[in-house]
Length: 207
Image 1: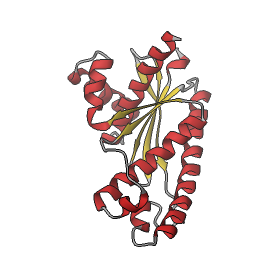
Image 2: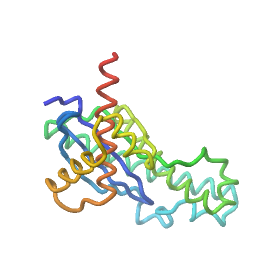
Image 3: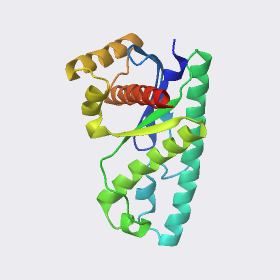
Image 4: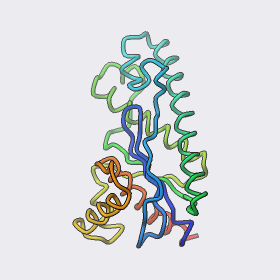
């Protein structure tokens, strides 16, 4: 088995994420681990929707509270990703890369502008949790990739050279092998991990 081809795929939600570790090879991947990653401390009020929680505060207070939320979520993400990598390695699969599904949004403005726009508040929260996952992946020494969620299936059909219907069936087969839950979160995280395996292989071959 090609240990270096193992990869982590991550899809973030508000306060949590789905993590999938794929092992095997790019041609024949297999789900090694599936996990719901908690990114918001239930003891920290407002941490599930951090920007919503600070929208009515003064800018100074908002910045301070957001820093508390960020510190908490980063610790949770680091612990969860470190655990996934450790358990995967113990099972004979050493992840070398991570792929995080991204939004299609534009770069965020400063905090004051974010808090003045409700749609931007939602966008900022998505980026908040993705940033925590990116930080956690980098701390584990993983090569971090990203793909826009809306483009993930199209990108995968091109980069993996697999027709869409076949690709969807192969991911469905992985789901049947590991059992429920196997929703859009798990499917997209698996797709992200598969892309990370491919991109990692390509990057390694260029070295």
